[in-house]
Image 1 (tube, one colour):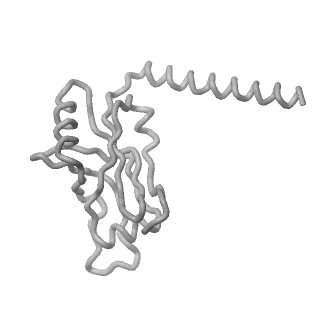
Image 2 (cartoon, helix red, strand yellow):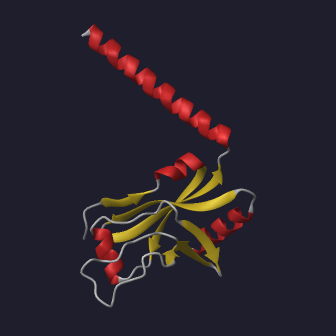
Amino acid sequence: MGDGIKVVATNRAARHDFFIDDVFEAGIVLTGTEVKSLRQGRAVIGDGYVYIDGGEAWAENIHIPEYSQGTWTNHAPRRKRKLLLHGHEIEDLQQRTREKGFTIVPLRLYFLDGRAKLEIGLGRGKKMHDKRQALREKQDKRESERSLGVQRRLNT
């Protein structure tokens, strides 16, 4: 049907602001104009969040702009959208979000073989010192890789 994964939007800040413990792939209920707008590669999931209500998972504040060729059938850009998960996954998420500090954040919005999917992560919020530590480790890794590259060039 499709040809693998086509990423539409990623939430790069999520892994910076949260320790992601578990990752789930959820289908997302969309209207026709939303799918067409996503196929144009336009969406923002940075300020989105996911919550469980009445045994159903909902994504809110995910911005999918109106389809440019859409007419009166166009959608509201920031409407809440239902996520499609297995019952045991929803129960697991609901139980773990009751624990202190856990939240569900959207990580990626993509097409998998032609079907829209939202990758969500169960995460705990990072403290400021955790963010600084992660940034320091990332910089150290980058510097070591850079110095190894310089050594390889000198040795050849």
